[in-house]
Length: 371
Image 1 (spheres, one colour):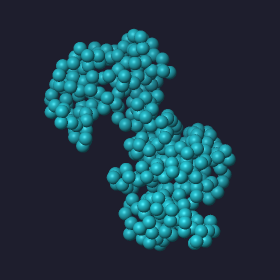
Image 2 (tube, rainbow, N blue to C red):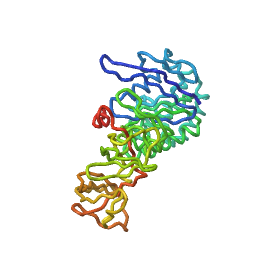
Image 3 (cartoon, rainbow, N blue to C red):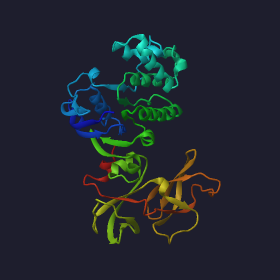
């Protein structure tokens, strides 16, 4: 199981900086997902690890050995592309066995490995089919089997499920995670799908504009992100600008116009009275009721101005009397009252789910921008 170390790696294409002083460690046996907006550098980063792209400076080590100047074939990695890159003139069996054949193994030697991979990915029945005869999911499973059959212990996946429909992606991503763990591999997986990353990654790397913004376990980055951009990009969040009014034990009182909210203090974020701050809360943590709860802590009266059906959820936009617009997601159940656009409601922002940040020096809009 290889460990990967990336040390101060940078790459530019003319005046465009794709990677800027990237440093990252991926541990033995980890499944790491790299996410970020289009053009943030995530594909350039994984191609640099594979040897497809040569960085301008910096060093990449696999198992403690520098591979910065090694050709692709000597790095010991299995690479799965976003485009399903199968050989159209070869059937599934021959596609999967291709790397072993190039390595000089006889047909007898290859048979056991290839059969094992076909079994593990449940595509043995397709072994004599050609790519044009396969579904998108079966083609990508074949590409994954080919990468695994090479014997590589480092699997690099560049948007491997991007071309597949939602249901197929959901099935294959969990199979991928299972295979990586069962085979004792290390995996680095680039994806634009935040839900995909949250569901399968041991750790997530958030990138923006060629830099790493934040790295951490999925639940930590979702529930307690250190950066405002992470809260914005990984899921959805409401953001409000306020002024710290005073410290009250382990909480802060934050003034927003004529409204005061109570927010729990956060480690490593020092705020003093009169400091400008940013509050964030996930829409699913906002509570909404028909009855009047105006005397409850962090309760705001308002009116529903938008409502949309999301399958098992209802998504609402509530305009509070103080002018705040708040997104609320409510799980659908038979017990819930029928709430409609135009209804007066009370929303509650629980202090345990409110996140507080120092206001960015460059401004909130720029911090939240995807570029």
